[in-house]
Image (cartoon, rainbow, N blue to C red; front, side, top):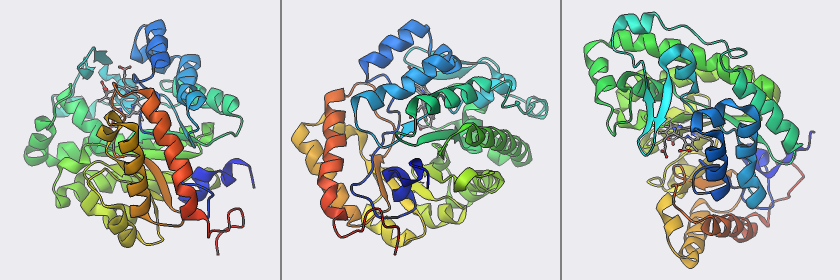
Amino acid sequence: MSQIKNSRFLRAIRREPVDATPIWIMRQAGRYLPEYRALRQKAGSFMTLCKTPELACQATLQPLARFSLDAAILFSDILTIPDAMGLGLYFKEGEGPHFTHPLRHARDIQQLSLPDPETELRYVLDAIRMIQHELAEKVPLIGFCGSPFTLASYMIEGKPNKSFPMIHNMLKKEPQVLHQLLDKLACAISLHLNAQIAAGANVVMIFDTWGGLLNTADYQEYSLRYVQQIIESLNLVEDTPVILFTKGGGDWLELMMQAGCDVIGVDWLVNLADARLQVGSKVALQGNMDPAILYQSKEMICAEVDRLLAEYGSGSGHIFNLGHGIPQDVSPDNVAVLVDAVHSYSRRLHEGDQYGRGTF
Ligand code: CP3
């Protein structure tokens, strides 16, 4: 078995015994790190950072140099696919992502073509190959994409909006046009994720950040159905695991599991003990500390880590993470406290497990 398959992170995903609960953090390479801010300044913009494989590789490795994290996540963005489809992605300081050419008419959707991963998105694949070379099997690398519904929310709105009214309007008025777009996006994402896996991603994660705004029936019809289509299309190298994160998806764990993922990412509204009861031994759980806890004292961070570890309980199958991305203004010192607390406090929960001897 390769060294990486035996890592804490991949063992926890397979619910095999581990010595301690693994942790990584959504947006672990980001603005809360002074070295990230320096690198972004050097690059000139976030998009240049994403599109220059050497710099994306450096950004990916920055948090691992500081903290003993159990996984690396590719430095990139879910919106690189719409960018490669010709929408022209740019970021306005303090405002988030914007598109120069948002989708306004049915014909805009009909005219969209699928980007070729090895040309239009080659920079992502080059970054993965470079990162894997640098990581040298130290920890697994997570590749990722956004869900079709989440990408469509940004592509139709053109700029960030808390409720994305335009896609919800299209869903009511022109559902067939929306289905056309979601289907195209599912194809583009499948191609891209398969290329990420072929380039060396050990795990892939699907971020469905905005699917949680839908009611249950619409979530199934407009979001989960396309996520399932993507999962079914993956050419998994060595059974590459799939993590599915739906912010606000706490009521849908059973449905998410049926879509074929290996890990469900949950936000902080979910109780880990209840979630574990629901998913049984079918999938692992990832999450779910409220990111706001990172503004508190070191004692409070440690107490919350202890509480969440106990809420999941003993045994494998938990990957510690935040319930959403890390805010830009938390102190890296508090992140160090978090990572160390997860590793040290969790050992007692794994003592009975025969680490290294496989499942039984
Ligand atoms: O997790 C990681 O460290 C890997 C890299 C990563 C980024 N974005 C880098 C990034 C990942 C996995 C994402 C996913 C992403 N991007 C999502 C899904 C997860 C989530 O947060 O819900 C979404 C919705 C996006 C779209 C996006 N990209 C937004 C809304 C923003 C602005 C956020 C902000 O804080 O201003 C981005 C920019 C972005 N993507 C940054 C980073 C580090 C900040 C860019 C900067 O200013 O330097």
